[in-house]
Length: 67
Image 1: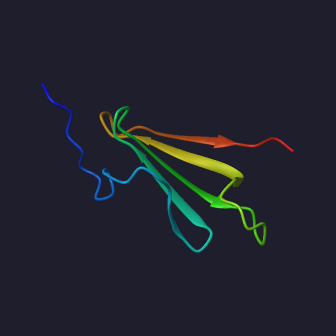
Image 2: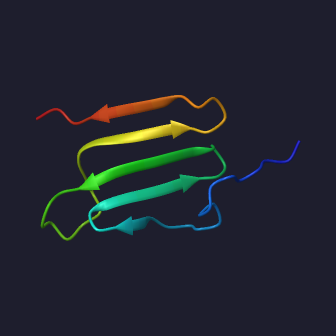
């Protein structure tokens, strides 16, 4: 069965950003990543947490950085 891409930016190979909120879609693994970047850093590196949604199952995982 061929893989399907249901996300609107599935063909995009990079990271989509709106302000300091960033999104990435991994079509091969069917994973959607979302995070806030560090304020005033000028990078897309995550600040404190990354939320990953597994599209096949609908499960959501949250990864939090320890300080």
